[in-house]
Image (cartoon, rainbow over all chains, first blue to last red; front, side, top):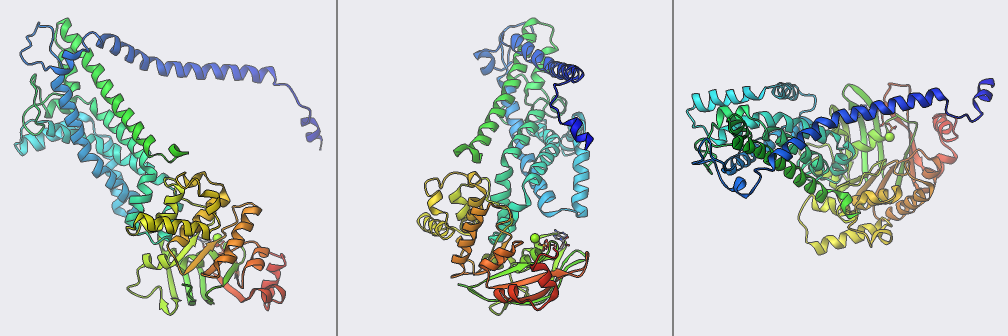
Length: 297
Length: 258
Ligand SMILES: Nc1ncnc2c1ncn2[C@@H]1O[C@H](COP(=O)(O)OP(=O)(O)O)[C@@H](O)[C@H]1O
Ligand SMILES: [Mg+2]
């Protein structure tokens, strides 16, 4: 009884709690600022340095016949290469990753096969990117005798992309309430159609976001490309034959050259890469928004 | 449309745990049959064995017979999917498909199973929504998401979705337990109307509700925690509520336990 009587009067916040509140508040803002500084710094550096050469010529020309000290030249061959390599690796790893996730969540729950797949996906997540490149170099190019090509690079990238896609899709599929599956079964909808028409659409937004993150991750990979795509200064539109270029390779190559014009090209290449990833993200947002049920509300 | 269900010697398991034992009963067509009993005695489990939804849970299995107008639902060669098309189900919590509009929700059972011309789908959607007493409330916003409706409306939407596939039996697992009294009344009215056409089985925790809407009532109970649930008594509702023949039934109905 006395405890209740003591607690009843409405009190002002004590100075001690005010102080604690202030300290924690400052700490949280500080942590946020520290986290944001590198992001802003990177963006600022890339934009301010990259704009110097970010022009029409840069976007439409390759480095063919550009001498070591010449100005001009561009990254068209590298942009084309990156787009083709990333598109190919997505074509390989998104279907496989998505189907794996569907198996893990919808069919394989608790089975030994599912557990071992899960284990190997975890192992794959930890594979360093250079090892993925080495593997394709040893297996695809040296053992099977295939040429250096954009496709070989895409294979290496898809090794890196697949586990990310599996994990992201798996997470999203698990978030779909069992209620919805049961509601569909109770209408006499077969399991595979339930997955296709109810489970996947419900998880779509999250899966698209996950796939975009995976793409963003591999788009900037340099090491595996170095070993599989090789280098070229010319435009190679065929991703299945002959050395290609990629934006990360381009940046790597230009930044290593001693002239200021090359350094400027490297910055412009980095800016292009960031813009491509941002555009992809924007596209993903649009897809998510377009499919979202809240749109018509 | 409406069919009789005859259950004999039915046991249901979750893995090695026997949840219900030796249930036998007849469920009459064009009537409402209510299941009452304390929590955990296997009412939901039994209800889900009637349209083969029980086996959806990993490790769950059923022994015994369920006859729908003489056809054994657990006979060899019977497709669970087709069983569920003729025996619809409404769940405790309203569960409209979140990615679909009101219209698409009602049409889901039709569209997910086969192609159907738009005009015919329109017709079925309107008919089902009218059947579920929801048409007047939603006819101007059929293209809005089903999740935007109130709880009671969502539950009627789920009923409309279930009757759109024209089942012969409708199973309802505590359909009003998440709803306010007004919505509950709306659903009860609806059930009374639907029994003209369907065989209805409803699980309820609400004695008054069972008394108001059901024709026959089955009382489920279990001997002790961990023991399988059993049907203690089944009778015409009025008789069950006025002069039950078992002591346990009387205790439960008068609120002495459970
Ligand atoms: N998914 C499940 N897995 C394992 N056991 C379950 C599951 N669902 C219910 N049970 C068990 O089956 C018994 C009956 O449960 P249920 O049919 O839900 O009872 P009621 O609907 O009468 O409250 C309970 O002992 C419960 O613990
Ligand atoms: Mg229950």
